[in-house]
Image 1: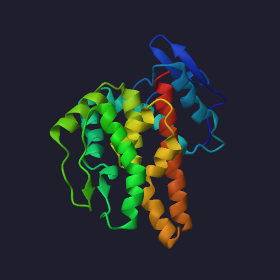
Image 2 (image 1 turned 90 degrees about the vertical axis):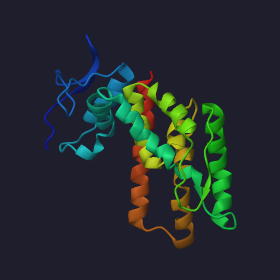
Image 3 (image 1 turned 90 degrees about the horizontal axis):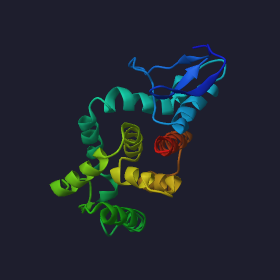
Image 4 (image 1 turned 120 degrees about the vertical axis):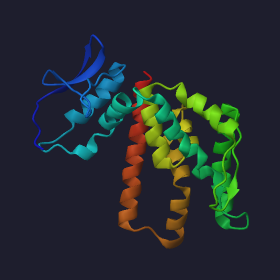
Length: 231
């Protein structure tokens, strides 16, 4: 699609902030007014439109897609959104380790265990650790506590958390990114530990490296979205 506007700016209206393209207020992909809670988030959305070249790249609208998801999907049905993100706790990557006699287990223990223990202390929960890939259900009390925690998030922060947890295959990592002063790149490295371990052993092909780089960009974009949503 050709770029059809000259200017993209953040504008404050009677219901909140929105993006205006040449003065025209944007709508979500579902057709609702794309109104966001603050100037910082509106500026983030406007920057995506402003950065487009002569040809618009639909894949570059990571922040717009999260805003639309928050407005069109989460706000009307928050319980479904909370239940969906809790699935990343039920099968959290950080809980599934190699066997203790394998070299990978030591690295998982060094990198993952502090993150998991910090979440347990912060949220007042307890996760089961598993050696191997056979699923073990987490305690209902743990899932209930995490559900209560997630349900307190506003729709926009919850949209960011959904993206973070999906990319990391870990609610523990997603929640850690939301903490003040979090090192998102280090958390992404933790979530990618097994992939990076395999690359160290067998080498990394260009396609896998590009995929990892793209997913990191999406992960950091979700971090930025969450930060802006809370300003």
